[in-house]
Amino acid sequence: MKCNSLLLFCVALAMQSCHPNKDIPAGQNGNWVQRGEIRGIARSNAVSFVIDDIAYLGTGYNENVKGNRLKDFWKFSVDSGWLQIADFPGPPRSNAVGFTIDNYGYVGTGYDGINMYNDFYQYDPVSGQWQQKASFSGDVRYDAVGFGLNGKGYIATGFNNYWLNDNYQYDPHTDSWSNAISYSGLKRRAGLVFVYQNRAYLLGGSNSGGMVRDFWRFDPSQNATEQWKQLRNISNSNTDVYDDGYTDIMREYGTGFVLGDQAFLVCGKNIAFNNNTWVYNFEKDLWSRRTAWERPGRTGATAWVIKNRAFVATGNNGNNTLDDCDEFMPDELLNPND
Image 1 (tube, rainbow, N blue to C red):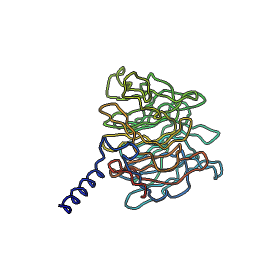
Image 2: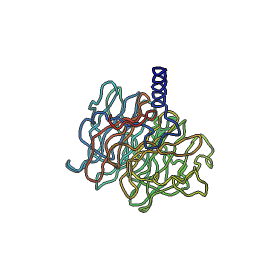
Image 3: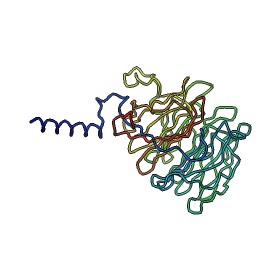
Image 4: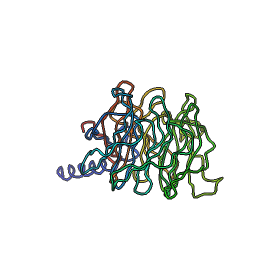
């Protein structure tokens, strides 16, 4: 009986480790595992995009290089690790946008500490070459958001001495930009976007020094008046109890990723640098807390998902620019020793 009891206990523990449930404290729900450092120079406010289970990362800020901005580019796979590819062809920059349309990567806008940009480039992973495309038709800017959706590209919001809430669409077949429907919420910079089931979700960022709490969903397949839908705020702003714990979701310069049918938000800054992690339930439009990243709080990190595995890397913690890289496993219990 003792052996059977021990066996049952071990099986139950193993099942619990693989499938955390609602009774597990938020601080232990999900596990961060250290992976190898990124190749090349440490950086923050870089861009990344994913093509065919390969992540691409480049540009960014480093306080120890001439001009403080970078143009080198790298690719990462879980099988081969990090390999350097052709440099980004435009001027070095940080705070740009990067996204994927079909099987190509795109990078545009950004800031070099003096100049803001609206140039735009395509990366072909087959040839390994960059090609300049039609310049972004909006004002020069940085701290915008960019995303690919239904075969089109979008650049929205950002900063160019003013906070912005405009939205532009790129058609890769005609290499042209056009005005897209803008949302009616607060202007913002340094927000972020999730893409899930052919819809984009815009949240975070700051406006005139304060954190933005409104949260929007964009679906370009809808009629013009219905393309943007406001979701629940990401702060405790409702008399219902569901948002009573929403004390630190608002942030600027955060990062995030979609893994399975959930979105995850990590890092960023709201008064202080943070490393907390939140998960979003698309169906219920609700947030819940998960295990914080076991690294110092930071801004300007990058994140990507390849082969159903999520990685978060780089950033700046206020004192140092970083080159670390960790994997997040949402269905494991926290193990502080890995």
